[in-house]
Image (cartoon, rainbow, N blue to C red):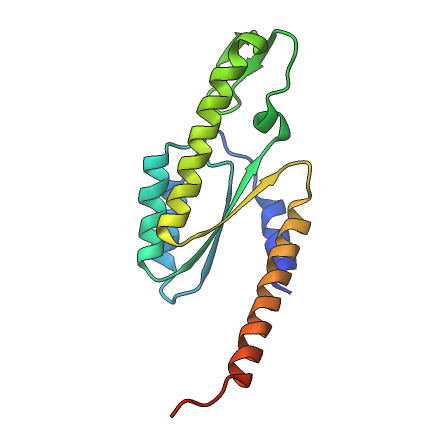
Length: 166
């Protein structure tokens, strides 16, 4: 039931012009008085330091945090062959790039950024899931929720079958 509500909420959300993790996460800290599960779905194109600050505030409130890092396969592989004009959708800036010349440095920075994001999640105890846009977000969320339910059943079953300790 929750998955349907989440998907309906995501359909209403319009794309922004920039990644702003601070404001929505600060707002979540203000609004969520009871501990619960907080799910962040983002491209995480913010500095690792800003991401860590925002996530730390949420974790400090006792929330279980789950991060879905959404990436386009072209970002991950940078498999462009011909020089082209690239437009930054957040800033509107246009850059003419020769991908053959830029690939090595791009992938180095991309890998370092993603490693930093994953490291922050591990450090703060947040579950990290990397998704690409060629996979349905709905299916990814469904798999996550199904896995979570199965782990919950396993834990309860294991506790019930555990020998009594005097």
